[in-house]
Length: 368
Image (cartoon, rainbow, N blue to C red; front, side, top):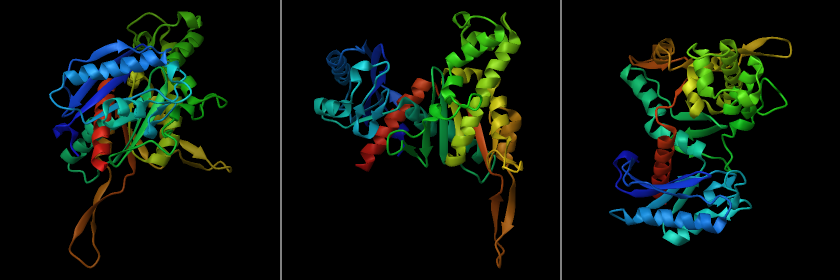
């Protein structure tokens, strides 16, 4: 499947708590002017009506019948069966609403609903970070290629998604990649998201700078303070991002031990990547001990920052040598370096989600 050369049209939706934004994609490109309507977060009948109206208006603009509807919608949810049980920013869907089946009845085409974190990573696997890394290796003549991508988003929350060998992995309960609830390495009775989010950076800065949390600047301002470009406590700003990185690194070490793939970082706070990545890498490339105090590597693989020249060089070079096949004159390349690359998202988050939704729909249509 090559979604960049596919004539099928897929309807998409950007579902927020305030507004729904409807569009359509073909050949991995948006082909209509988006339609924006109120979400009616507290009124199910109005919300569903808004959804039908939005998709209908988009269909009227299309040159052909769409093949499917595919979009991200806030959970909790049973995504494979299209059942939404949201109790957060869209409380009208609390209790379990078969949204997928409802839309299939209305439009008589397949409907696919997923988590935004999952679709973000799928988009980066299709047209972003994963192909960029493999292209970099290919151009350098390296025999190594990567097939698995673990992605995290850091913003209002701490989300994640998994793509393995071209397939989105969501788990049996639509709950794979729930990294937000891994243990917080700094505060062991708490979950990781408490230290990995916009609120976490603001609260930590306020604590270290000795100001009220209500008066804490936004993360973009804390970033400028850390860079010395804005007034404030530079050390508090640096330490705030360093603590976020420490908690991120520990959670990533636990996750990547099981997944073994490269890592892409997205979300609003990825703009401060340079402020927290060193702290995260110290965790991932650090040690862990036996009961007897014997140190072991925190993870089997070495994690390298692909945003740094040194990290890219070591990642590309690996440890390649030629191995002679016994009893023959043949040699084969062998790269003995187990490594993981980590870097920032290539695509804008909303663009990655849209591409992920589009590619997922085409993949499922091909299966059926």
